[in-house]
Amino acid sequence: IIRLIDIQNQPNLFSTFMLSLLNKIYSQFPESGDSDKPKLVIFIDEAHLIFKEATKALLNQIETMVKLIRSKGVGLYFVTQVPGDVPDAVLSQLGLKVQHALRGFTAKDRKEITKAIENYPTTTYYKADEVITQLGIGEAFVTALDEKGIPTPLAYTYMRAPNSRMDILTSNEIDTITSNSDLVIKYATDIDRESANEILSKKLEQQKNIEKPAAKATSTRSVPKEKDWTDNPVVRDVSRTATRKLMDFGMKMLTNFLKGKK
Image 1: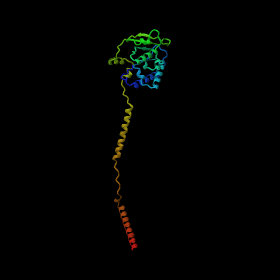
Image 2: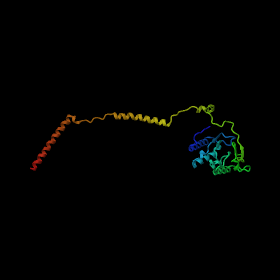
Image 3: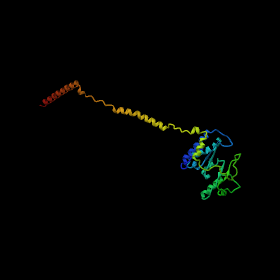
């Protein structure tokens, strides 16, 4: 039993989950043929949440799943208050229909009643558009498929209440059921696998630790002091000799220049 709660305000999430679930069931279940009873039954409550704001591609995919999933031995039940919440293409694929009372308080409600009656087989036993507004608690119009796959006439039916408590299971009841399940050995133990985020974070941290010592070594390395060549005695002597010759040459040029002017 998959119990989804608190997602009424997230129709996109709900429809995406249900489509993913149906697609997985269809792709993995073997062909079943015409069995006496389904291997799996899915009741989709608040079914209008699947179709609300759904794209055309999504609706086409749901329609395809509804048509084909029956060959896998899977029964699909859409539960909603107004039949108009379910698209006609999906509604036409549903063999069993149970319609409780509809009240015609507004013009829109009366249109929904007319549409709902048109989706059922024509009957000469009831004025269906009148009776459907007079149904009481536990009463419904019902039609199904017979042995030949033909829809049965519309029947005004008293529904027998389930012989169980119509309430959410308590935590103790859930623990009792799950502890007796064959799957408890596999799914009761939590496995905290290393996530992709943890793996990437660890690699980044290792990279930082590698880069830090290299940066530190680079920053602490002393810059070699520029050598002062004037400390060399040979260089000093050559420098002094060159300076004297340059000065003598300059004085000689200046003397010749002055003599020429005279």
